[in-house]
Length: 136
Length: 138
Image 1 (spheres, rainbow over the protein chains, first blue to last red):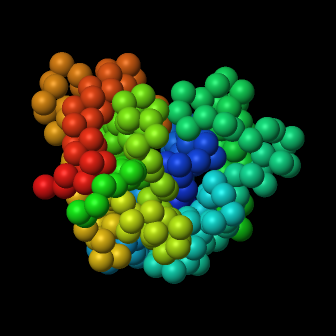
Image 2: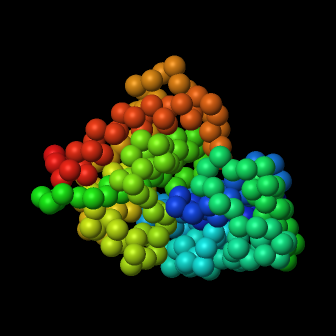
């Protein structure tokens, strides 16, 4: 019997409760998961690599993974590498914003319209990375 | 913690998959911005996952409240994984159980009832924050 498995990409987002880029990362990743690539992506809460069990720590071995970080500390990338497996791609929000000439966000919540627009731009970059991983 | 604490650290669930993670985060922001500004502080929970020295120092030197979004209790466990005791721990779903007229919706962004629930929860946690800030940990 032939089985067809649809390959999905795992998205690991910076949660960044203390930085506006973390909020932007969460919003952008949700857009990818819910709107841009809902059939091709899954996610995991980053702290589950510590708080969860073996199933959660196998995430990066089950799925090619894209990490999205809000700052240079790169928690998502480092946690995934350390506790689960090497990501296929690692994106950094400040780099994406700089490439698009977009100002850094300043709000932790209640994002302004221009900050929500920035989240859309970041989401489209993540979606492009998903396509590259699946096509690669 | 016998001496008076100047800050209280509130750490919320980092989840981006469930509404109660968003409620936990919004409750933290309400405490920080409106209810007890200057007393309540937070840090990014994943910094504890990568053993960030500044984040570890913050939670080691101040009383910590965790607010989790699901029974996996990532916030609570991420602190305790470093041998640091959590002073008070909450599950955000219990905020809803106490206020069933405020059923939250939304994940990336909470709806109006979700924001109201977080505001009410933050008001109710104010006394606990005050006790911890005064070094009256029970």
